[in-house]
Amino acid sequence: MSFPTKKTPVPFVRLGQVYAVRATRSGLVSWVTPFGEPFYSESLIVEDQVMLVSAYGRVFCMNVETGDLSWNAPATNIARLIGGIGDHVYAVTMGGSLTVLDRKTGATVSTFAEVRPGQALANRDTNRLYLVSDSGAVQCLRPLNSPLPKFNTTPDPEPVVEEEVEKVEEKEPSSPFDAGGMDPFGAGGDPSGAGGDPFGAGGGNADPFGAGGAGGDAMADPFGADPFGN
Picture 1 (cartoon, rainbow, N blue to C red):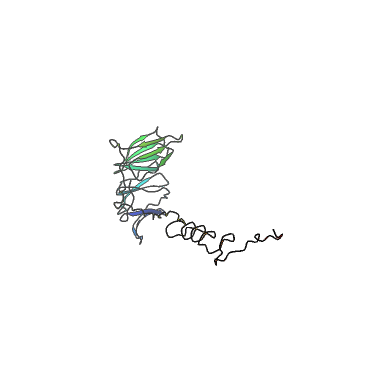
Picture 2: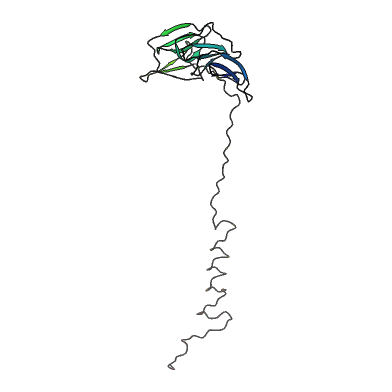
């Protein structure tokens, strides 16, 4: 399976007619093919072919670029398409069995009555088909000699550059004692230092019990004079 690109028309159905619209901003209609049958299932695109299942169980195959029919007659008794691998198209019959169609002609290659997928998981990225039974068993189908999956979509050649997250530089918490800060216990700010001790020799305030006051005068001892005359 493959995805339509901007150069490949995208098919859709309206009132029994299949339209191919360019997957561009203009959305121009490339071709229109009338069938007169209702379609409710999603189309299946495999390389240059687009296939649709009508409500009557008929599969129509067209060229994805021109809309011309690729098969001489539609495949019948098909309930839904599962996927395409190589030259084969895998589908579920109206009775619920797995069947394989020739992608070039639409003829039935083989039908497996014992394989009855309850659901089909769409896988448009690789050439793997996943079937889920009603009991919950999952089966993976792959082509012979294909141990590794083959990718149908081409990865983007330009690497995706993730935006760099701006790193916020963590700063250490500042301390009031760092250089440039005022240390209350420094030489110029210690109240008990040489320049600020009120009891120091050079303090600005005189010791009331010292020998000399601020002006050098002796301070009278209030207990020096004996009030009893002794």
